Image (tube, rainbow, N blue to C red):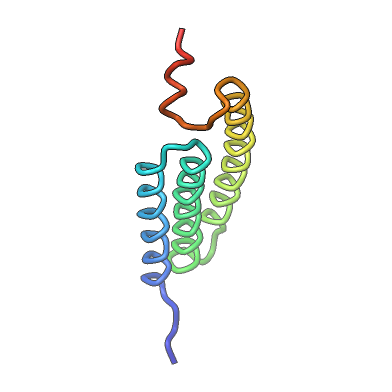
Length: 104
């Protein structure tokens, strides 16, 4: 029977990271970019937990770091939603290219 090891988790983390970077670089609307950021943060959380589980089994450092990543993601999402609502209120669009008109 196949056992799931560290390599499998690292592959999942790498896939999440590459999908997140792809989404952040190709999307033009702010919501899509935020989804890409969340994917990148989730890939870091998967790697923290995987390394904690397979390399150091006596401490909970990876899981504590993952809790900090989750708190950071929640705070980032709350602030980003407020920014998107304000952007939509001012421009009636969430296109980040149009946000450059808000300078000055």
